[in-house]
Image (cartoon, rainbow, N blue to C red):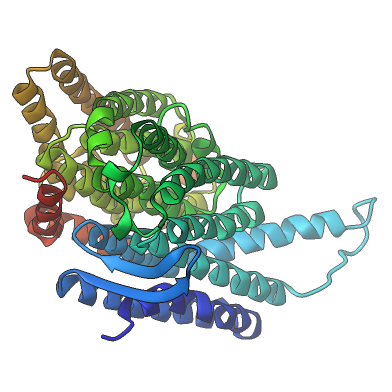
Length: 517
């Protein structure tokens, strides 16, 4: 298909105003289905392009920056597919959750507008339906721009283009949190914007050092041998720090528990499984591929950094009572797995890291959707106030167990293959190099998997099993809008666990090329 990648990236952006108008004029349901249709079409385009092999498109831009292009290869295609599959599925899930959120906010605003003595009539500037329509239109328009920014970042072929898309996805992300988050949402939205923008600025400094030295910002023109050693090392560190903020790895993780805890659950289910993992994509593309010698020097530091993140995130998850904060710290731990695999400097380890992105996207997407159903149907996020919900919400419970097994790496889910390959690669490098440090990190990495199993099983036990509290006796299963998307992801993770070559064959070929094996 001509201009396939250009369509996949820019159609959601160009048609987002229509989603906005449709929401305001016709309501959330038409806006939801319109948004779903756009993203489904774009997803089909991406999958079709991936099936045809490597696809590359280039368009004239400006002599100052170089070419504007898109590349869908063995590295980008799994990231791109998971980003758009999650974005498409979560559109349907968004409708009942966001209507629930809009109703809550409408009631809050009505209380604020009530007369001072509390006895007067409520001052209404619009009816509830008009309020919901207006908010729905804005939500789905921002949602489309957010999805487009993520895909554009993954497909970019130019450093400045990468930076632009990297920043574009932060803007709708900020508004989605600041407008419809929980708690002090504006403050948390600003925290998200500050941290991620600061990381992006550091990333840009690394890009500028490379681009101005080479004389081009196009990936194809970058040759590590043409960059002075001191500049290439500083650039790689700046890129790693900037992407580390996006990954929310240890030291740069502060923002993530607050943002995931506050964000509307459909957005949490995109931020955690899809957006933060783009930092790992950046390390693959910008350091491992473009700066291989420097990557070899830094790999052990990535390895240790990943291990510390795995253990810290898992330990913190064990201490949480808020189900969304538990899942947020779990995401930090899972990003540690990705960094751990990247630092292994082996084909298997690198392939395992990318498989972990896929499995984390599926598993954590399911778990955040589970959390959203509980919030809507039960009205609490406190794990200590839950229990025995498996009998009340059987579909949600089964999907949550599959999601948890995926994160734990238990067969037959996709998580098993990701973890198996990742640790195989880490051990392979430790043996080949005879490195005591790598052998120790491998052993401690296995301990981190025990932490992962601990907090996941502990959460499942407290939420779905045991005695049902009296105040939960009348709880019912979520609507099909919310349960069907979970079932799709749950089925996908089992299919991928049984037949991992859907992605693994492509990934292994690419990683072999990166390491020259």
